[in-house]
Amino acid sequence: MSVAAKPVVVFVLGSPGSGKGTQCEKIVSTFGFVHLSAGDLLREERKSGSDDAALIESHIKVGSIVPVEITINLIKKAMQKNGDKNRFVIDGFPRNENNYEGWEKHMNGAADLKFVLLLDCPDDVCLERALKRGQGRVDDNVDAFKKRIAVHENETKPIIEKYRRMGLLRTVSSLASPEEVFEDVKKLFVDI
Ligand code: UP5
Ligand code: MG
Image (cartoon, rainbow, N blue to C red; front, side, top):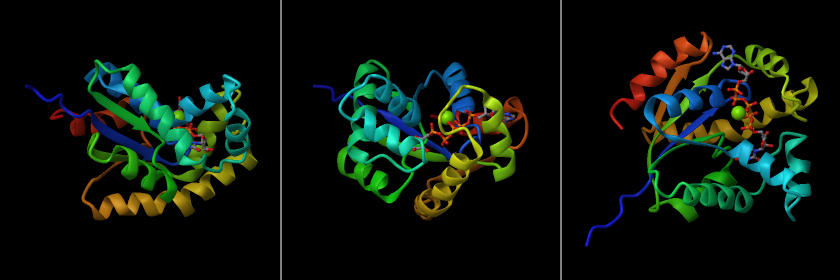
């Protein structure tokens, strides 16, 4: 009896506006991965008006992190929905200790985490990009952005350091154009 292979996962982290979504779309079109943006999944759930919608909104608008039980459930459901696919780029997760522990508890053993891609970009450039994006996100204003940067600094960076110590971190500068950044990103995906 053959045992189904575990899904392959790459996490994509980086400051707000560093280009996670942009690079993930390129990874999808070049390498056929499925892109799951934790932020997009939460925004969709918020829109659905479910029981969690108000709680999700209260976190997103100030840039704080939604409890992992909600996020991991959405990620798991999205992975199951793509059950015929086996390779996922998960963008914007895990972003604090609670997220990290939730993944370990629910998914460690159920998925094969290959590496963690960190997109590295100065905060002022990220801010300019987020404000220019024009998608009407409730958190794309200077005040909310500053809070998102602070959360990234205080809560996400310790998780990034954890992955560095585990030898799983791959850092790429995302300061250049999306196409140039992807030239570096591409090299990490050719063998998986
Ligand atoms: N752009 C991209 N790359 C560029 C480049 N190389 N040169 C010039 N321009 C570039 O890019 C941002 C903008 O910059 C776009 O206009 C793009 O064209 C341009 P994008 O690819 O969208 O950047 P990204 O890193 O995805 O930025 P985003 O704002 O989505 O990052 P955040 O991490 O802030 O947002 P996310 O959606 O992940 O999370 C939002 C909120 O959801 C969080 O603050 C939190 O409240 C909540 N959340 C959780 O609680 N838990 C989670 O697990 C995830 C999210
Ligand atoms: Mg994004």
